[in-house]
Image 1 (cartoon, helix red, strand yellow):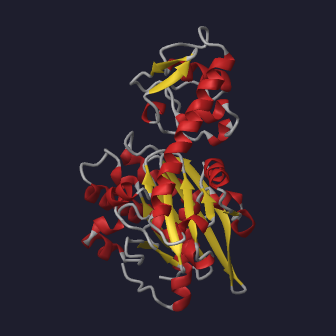
Image 2 (cartoon, rainbow, N blue to C red; image 1 turned 30 degrees about the horizontal axis):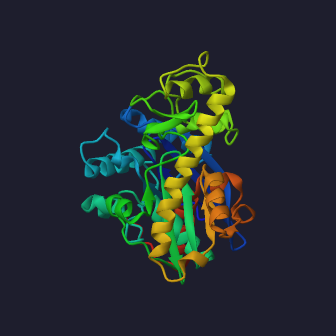
Image 3 (cartoon, rainbow, N blue to C red; image 1 turned 90 degrees about the vertical axis):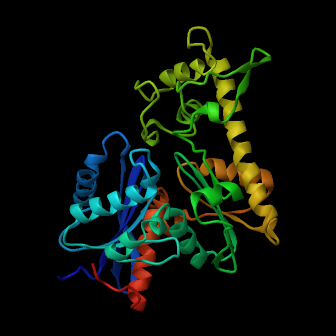
Length: 356
């Protein structure tokens, strides 16, 4: 089997999005050359995962045997009875989609494995994308807090002395430590952010229904564009400001005829504030457990970077501009890019053992 020595691709296979970044090594420099993002809600049709991966490979121009580095979070989806089942399913789909390629799953010990090794201990390969991002950032910015606010979750990862010093590595431990916050800028239901909101000068309880999402909030506030609203809307209608206003009004059992634009905008602004407070609360929890934690800059990636930057502004913390290093499109697929770079570095040092 002859492998392309100059290119490799990192994959981040989530429960609602698949992201991939191809790297190219030329003249001792490795640079991102192409990114691909595909919304894919795995619980709706998990049987299409293999086809989705193969189509993305074609979009990236992958030809012949490739080196593929893999992280995942899709295993948590209720498409699978257990995370073990989910990890094994994703690994099988990757192998079937790219039969001639050498696939290297990344694990929670920060190591790349063969497929056989990963299948022997699949839980070590569950929810690994945050660690790939953190280890990559640590090599470039040895003292910082990595903040990755995505469509569904927020990672708050402390890095000091070039080491990732998280309290936990599994999702549950990270939820307890504040290093994982299950809130994001697109898919989160606002009723998970607040249980009431001010309407007409009085507190109003919100509906325990899936009428809207935080994507509507940030569309109304102008923080995201319709193209950046990459998940389906709650009602299946268009990703326009007008439709988003109607969905938001339903959160308080109203509609866009009964509430005017200013009232809906005020509701959206309140929801932004409360979600930001959730994130800042967890950021304080993480920082309070570190020596000199409050002096660390924030390295910001993800769709919700605007929220992380606002959190930094309120805390008086500097932010690290990563765009000039890797570009805007790569930052939106940061774990995929990071795991590809990590694999590239291991190959350069001759660490990875290539066996299937």
